[in-house]
Amino acid sequence: MKIVKYTDPWTYYCVEEFLDTEQACELFKLCQETEFSEDTFILNGDIQNSAPVHTIMPNELHQSINEKLDYVVAYLGMETENFHWGFSTSKTYPKLDPQLMPHNDDFAELKQYGAGKIKILVYLGCNDTSYKNWGTRLYTTNHLDSYVKEVEFVPGRAFIFVPTAETYHGTDFKKELFANRFVLGAEYMENRNG
Image (cartoon, rainbow, N blue to C red; front, side, top):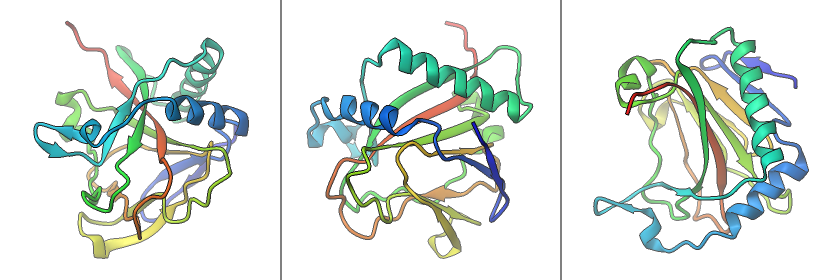
C-alpha cells in the first residue's frame, strides 16, 4: 500500500487503492441495499449532511480494512496504548443544503467527545458515475473563501489526516447529487469505559 504525503494547504495523505476496485464497488453495493428516506437524515429535528449506513460487511473485507488501518497508524508512527480503530459507512445528504461547512475536527478540542486522533475517508463507488465536485474540499480557515483545493472523489481512494486546529475541510457540491455518495469513515480513537 503506497501512502502519498501532501502539505498544501496542510499535511494530509492519500492512498489511491486503499480499497481495490472490487472492494470499493462491493461495499458501495452493500450500502445501496439500505433503505433511505428524508427522515434518515433528521437528528433532533435538524437535517444532517450525512447519515449512517448500517451494513454487514463480509469478514474478509472487514479484516482487510482493519489490516490497512493498522498499517496507516504504524506508518504515521502514532500507535497509542488504549486506542483503537472504529469505522463505518455513511451516505451524504443529496441536496445542496445543509452544506458541510469548513471545519477542522481538532482532536485537542474534540477528544473529550470520543473523536479520533487520525481520520480517514474512503470514497465508495463502482466507477460507473462521474464524481466531479464530490470530493473533500480543503480550506485554510472556516470560511468558504479560503478554499485551496479538492481531494477528488475516486472510488477506493483514502483521504487521511491528523485533525488539528488547521485541518479545515468540507464539501461544496455545485448541484444536487444525482446518485448516492457513500464513504467509509474511520477514526483512531481512545477506548472508553462503559
